[in-house]
Length: 339
Image 1 (cartoon, rainbow, N blue to C red):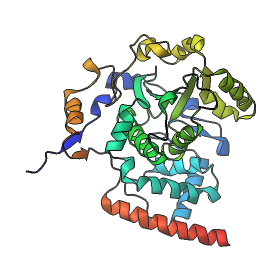
Image 2 (cartoon, rainbow, N blue to C red):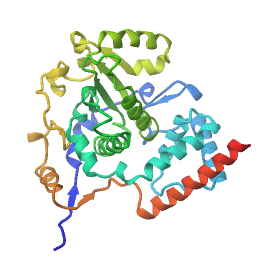
Image 3 (cartoon, rainbow, N blue to C red):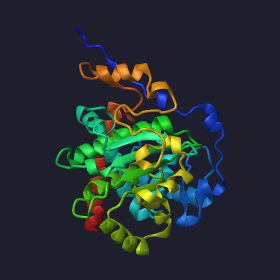
Image 4 (tube, rainbow, N blue to C red):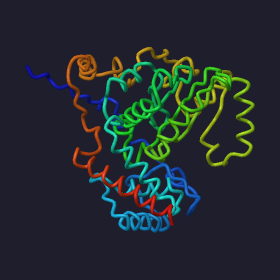
């Protein structure tokens, strides 16, 4: 007998239209600073300036020169994000694009594999609530990070799959295009701090989820981490540090300047109970947090074949083309290096 297929539908995560309609961004939020110093938070349904358009044209010239076939669902915002990731420099574009297309070509980055789901059930990363501008809040519990339990590949796969779900279902083009990230350090000392895992998460987000981070809270730091952070802050880029805030438990009230208390768990100074079930992602604005449909689908995943609903970014044919393009790009890069 043929197995019944399961559809994972995360539409229940979407914000209500009245909340979306109430969001108004000023020009400085959408984009600030000029030319190569530009910083952008909104990429869709907004105009791009002359310098951005010039750099996008330069990027596409490199694509054409290297005979790269971009995926069918490639958009202008994808091009602009590659430009930003490449720091507006022609010499960086090929490497950035190569990395991103390679990531797109890995099916496990977009599918609910057994390992991806096992990872997400642990509560290593999960979502809870939204900030006052309806940006979703992603929490990462560093105490649970263990590269011996889940290797580097699984971290990339699972984080990519989860971030993709949040981006697709919690974002609204032109309105909500960023998330708030809470990283709970659990007072881990430097010797136990999972620097490599954080590097993996950061690398995954920088290119493949470019421009999505609005704010990062580093919570509950140990004294050794606090001291190290002060030294890093003294020399780090001011624009980057503006997005990052380290807070001790007695300072958690500062989070409520951006996030309402009922959208925060008690462990972070909020009024909502701490979450104990981490998969599937919860929407605390709907009764029970989940739809009956998604709960049944998740339960059925244990015994039936899974179908991803609108999560895979390319067809099998597209994936084969991407792999071919990546091979060509690597050959071209090697030739350039020889020069």
